[in-house]
Amino acid sequence: MQKAKTLGELKKSSYKSVSVRDEMRANLLRKLAAGEALFPGIIGFDDSVIPQIANAILSRHNFILLGLRGQAKSRILRSLVTLLDESVPFIAGCEINDDPLNPICRACHERLAEMSDDTPIDYLHPEDRYVEKLATPDVTIADIIGDLDPIKAARGGHALSSELTIHYGLLPRANRGIFAINELPDLAGKIQVGLFNIMQEGDVQIKGYPIRLPLDVELVFTANPEDYTARGKIITPLKDRIGSEIRTHYPNCIEHAMAITAQEAWTNRNGRTKVLIPEFLKEVVESIAFEARQEKRVDKRSGVSQRVPITCLENVISSAEYRAVKNHEDKAVPRPSDIYTAMPSLTGKVELEYEGEMRGADQVARDIIRQATARVFKKYFDGVPLQSIVQWFEMGGTLKYPPNASAGEIYGHFKKIQGLLDQTQHLGIKAKDDPGLLASGGEFILEGLAALKRISRSEELGYHLERQRAESPTEEPTSPATAQRRRSLN
Ligand SMILES: [Zn+2]
Image 1 (cartoon, rainbow, N blue to C red):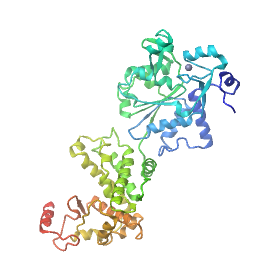
Image 2: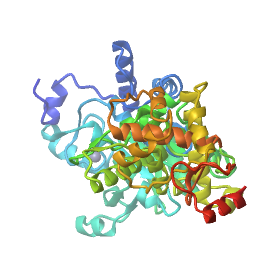
Image 3: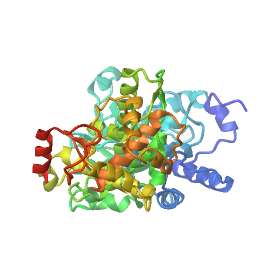
């Protein structure tokens, strides 16, 4: 069907005015009936957050998502545009997207009086109908609602009090669409009052001039739960007008978390070096977030964002890429030690409690990586006899190699430790696999044993055992000076 180009044609078509909330509701019902996924790409919220959002939309509510950072709140709000029609008509040139059959701005009223059915019609697409604003203390009424524009007044020869002199803010520009405000509690009280007035009555005052704008907007918000519930941060009448409060959460299980990280992290590198990421390593990276969220030295109120494992995995891959290119290897296989190289992706994103601050961000990050390693190690090696490996160190074996040692070099070292490479089969690695994978798996076993304190590891000595017997060094001949130092560590 040809789209109407003028008001006259539109009136002859089947078009009816529908409010944005009725439109979202109708599309949601249609998707539900058709068994379509509601918010594709939002993982782990199928049984919690998504049904509640669906409820809020079916109830035609404004709503707020309460959650800590990195819980996909903004992403969910942006995906609401999938509930909007493909195109809706508006009066061409209107600054606030007026419905041709029901215009609210003064300019459109005047235009309609002049042009009647010849008034031109244009169309809005879903992405044009989503407006987002991060609330900060310096956001003004002018930003959100609007301001009188003296230049507009002078040019048009209008009185300043005329509606034609308004420079519209973000909210009127979101008319017939969705307006999202992130971190609502950071919005100044008087702007909250302005928002409330417009939600309640469609009335606004701009510089003392009362103006009526019965806007058609779905308002959605996000906030940190503690800020939102703190007394005095949100004016009560505004809270009262937010129909539904929906709590978001971090992924409940490691499988969901890994699926999110796989979706978001940049893992398919465009270099000539092929990247092979062992599954157990992805699990360690993901477990870092789970461990950090439980860690008492990490501030619970600010949370540990899902961006922690995402950026950590990206850094881990880069570290492996760097090493592979330097060593002229054709495959980049991340190893557990790359996670320590990736620490800059962790330390900046985690807020520490006082005790953590005292310990230092670096040390806390190291402890968390060690706990994550132990968690994954126990999953794969519960009940697996690793005594021959520990024994090698008990016999005085020590193993130290440079961080950028090639896979071949490490493979050579690991071969000397009885059972080490064989046990990588528990990680799904086969003897014929890429040496990089075997090196990574072998290092993971050593890291796991060190995390469980069955062997030791230090920057200075590499892998070793502190309770050392006097006889039979195997790997590196121990000098009397090193032996002396090691004894003093006991
Ligand atoms: Zn208009």
